Image 1 (cartoon, helix red, strand yellow):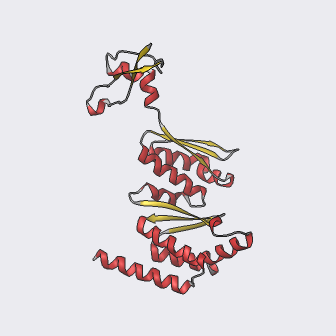
Image 2 (cartoon, one colour):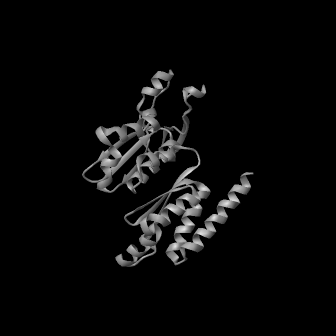
Length: 231
């Protein structure tokens, strides 16, 4: 026998001035997945378990190095609290395992918050990571393990990216107007989309063996082209 049950396929919030919509479906041998109800008011709808289940918050699970947990929390929890207040999210941290869960109702803001936490996890200062809340700012991670096979190769490549006294990293940052952080087996990049793309290409060129002079020359040309386009 066919069992009739209600499947909620859409919710339109009170802010939009639209009713709470339900539709009738007929499927074989399936019991209702949640208690059936007849909405009588907006208040009753928002209290009903079906509504609460569908309106559950979005969330991301993030694994971060244990040594970066203290940075994410901040002194007296100030960094964590600031991020939660600015993004209207909730951050749950398991200090022992290095697991972080971030929850929120706005998927776009939640995505940016996730990237902020990832940036802090990969060595960025929280103030720099905060730039990811701005429009068009993005985070990219270059996985160095994809380019090396031995620890010695990793050290050599990191040395080329950093340069003597940090010169190479600083020059690339200056020519691309990005922030670069080398942490563990990753290189993190924060900046505007096109700038991050140029910085990434420069870093990958150094990894591939290009000279620093040639990389700087290419970046200078890109910077001139960008300046001309802005005129």
